[in-house]
Length: 618
Image (cartoon, rainbow, N blue to C red):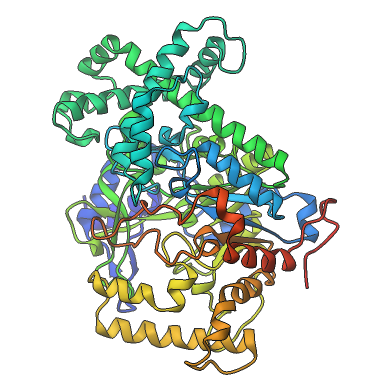
């Protein structure tokens, strides 16, 4: 096939032939990359391709027929909430990691302080057979939940065992979350609870056998395959292979193989156990969502939806045709990453994205628990940078998806479930993209550290249709940011050279000086120690006073924690996704830092018993 003919096919399939390079010039995509993508996508996408240019955002706006939900009462007020990491939660009853019952306790505290939502990082299913794969943004499946968050002592059939108490004490005393120990402990206790539950035929409540059978029937083949994958994953790990299917013997790499069918027939009980855990996780999260609203959180839970999936997990194994083999999601080279980025996530096929069983179905499931949902890297609904495995990132290209169709489907689901939608639109966002999000009723996602409006040169109002926060899970908390701890840490880990330190430190000093002048009305001096004690409260008060409809306060800041949750670009050199909160939930409201920040935020965004009667401005 000639390059010209190949390019014509690629354009129809939404494959970009070039992209803007790091030097500001157009980078041509190698023919090998385009040929590989065309071969992987298959003919279905060409037959059903829409006439609307996939990269024309004006045409996308013209094709939008629905708008995301927003409650009437939010029109005249601004609200706030607390953002936490599930695993970091500590309590007097935890099992070495936060769980759904702890999340309910957080919701009660947040509501009592005048908040309207509690946010958590993705709760998607990971790999129970390999608990150290703990990043919530590299899930095995976005369809199902992570059973490690089940409150074991609230599960039907749970019975206390002395050995559980000893193991629990050890898991609780570890400095960071010991995922391996916690997973073993909780799975073993849940197996006992499940065994007890199976023998109890008298239950007629929500935990009855009839309720479980209805759940299994409703979830259908998707749940059966996920549970089958989990059972196989544990079997393979026991035999010295990996938890992910790419490391398995070839005969087990496809869900419909003869060997997999035989395994399923011989392990029905084990498969049912994994289905049962999903059922319990679903019931407990559903209960937390209901209790959150009942406690007074008008938006309830704020859930995060990851941009992608692990290439060797349950989702890619269950639906192999829905993902492109030999490619992973990444980002092209840019001034911040001159070699580009490879995120190691599976690339969804544009053909499968048009099917009801794709990401939209997963979004629908997530929205059933959430009053507010955030799409991580929302540009992934429009285009993703596909990188050929084993090749330099620069040889990749953008793959476009049916954007308008996805937005319309999300808007319909948002209205049906009455869930607000936030699109994480950080980074290099193309012109016109945020206008599309606004048109469909999505809230933008703004972070103080990155805002051009909050810069050394100027301090200006925030866009109203947005969720604003000071920092995120990929950034250092405010205390560490103010002291440049993140710059020093990244240098020590080899992620920043001397020139990088100089550039970032210079910009940081300018921003700190601008904030200090704005907050205290005087020039910042090295001797300004006394006012440094009020810094957290002052910055949160300033941020809460901006125009954004939604404002999220980070738990780390409330507790005075200055450690980063996650340091992008690191693996074992930093304890990513493992740090526990500095103190248990029961002590939060006794901390001066917690009280001071909450008071400053509540003053700027006060609650009213009559929704919408107070706009919260000061």
